[in-house]
Image 1: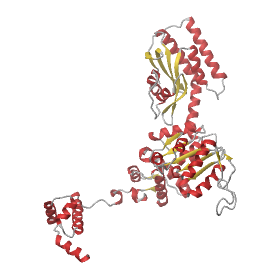
Image 2: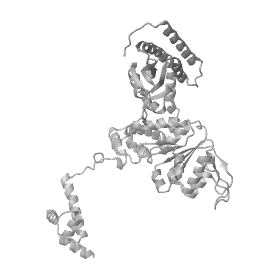
Image 3: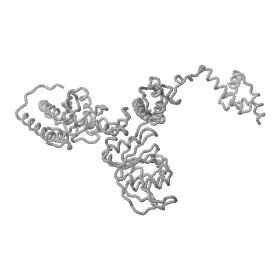
Image 4: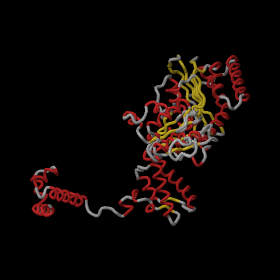
Length: 508
């Protein structure tokens, strides 16, 4: 929207200069570790007529918007600005209009709504692009009190200058947000670009900085351990131990000793004291995979650790203290286990502080080729082979398959193919038989549909006559047809019911 040009009055100009001077002072004198953008918004609230405001960043790697600073905005409003996977009922008009931030970032054009009605009164909405190095890196969105067109024009000029002043800070914040994932060690980096994985990546970054207990859910082979790995290596505990325990692979008695340790003489064969995994992970993170397989006795001890951070070794009486962050994972339906009283309700609620659901590979099909390329590169290095590409026919098979074993199955298929190839190319015939189609394997049906149906029908009739010892009436009832229909089909296929009565008697 174009506003008419107007010369600034002396009072307006003085106020503008004072605000800009204070903004510059905040940006120059405040340490980088503080919320400088938040302080600028707070200043505009106290002196610039701002009611609500937000600075939104563009993540170039995912094209997502992230609210980096906000003033007087509730969480549901922030969710509406962010456009995240979770949805909430907007609590203000700002939540409805701030979706324009994406339009501003994509077009580089300022959006102005001079009149909007809100619970806070009559307001105007302004959203301006923030540019740095000839690139739009974010947007400054503001709800301001409505004081007439002229005042809006004055504020628009003020906000435009402020958007220019904060641009270096926003560009730096943008780079740091994007670098958060690449800071992950290569061994734990998650390969994901599909829309279904975006909420997962966002939640990893959100929860990594805290010590909250995380429950990772999803089908077997979806990469739950990689998610746990990423959370640990992005956390403040990254330099401390990261201990992994596959609970389903250990028997109940062995699992209790593995987790909590045991004293010498605690049971037959316990010749000396053994430290448990919780003691080994002290100060770091413990990953409990397949938590749904825990026996009731172990569930009680785990609940105590989550509540009090204390436990005893098997056969011991000394209470031990531990500082461990717990990340659990399961592919089981814990709610169904609770109904069947095989999983404790109180333990479930202690574990389910921050749930993360990892989608199956069939719901993130755009990641299949990215993952395949990553596995080709990794397996080629491990096997000392030079595999340069995947053939078009093999790509078609990979994309057409439904992947019941998820990412783990894909990795195994690629490893097999890398082993088999002789010319540096993964061809369709290098993939397992489960991925092959009739065309790729040369097993297309030779007959017509009619001949195939007739062959199956004849086989069913013969089996029914054998089971009923040639009794056509009984065979017709079993097949759900009338005796007349049965007679016509017996005649059509040249069958002799008496023959099957003779065969049955001979076997009897």
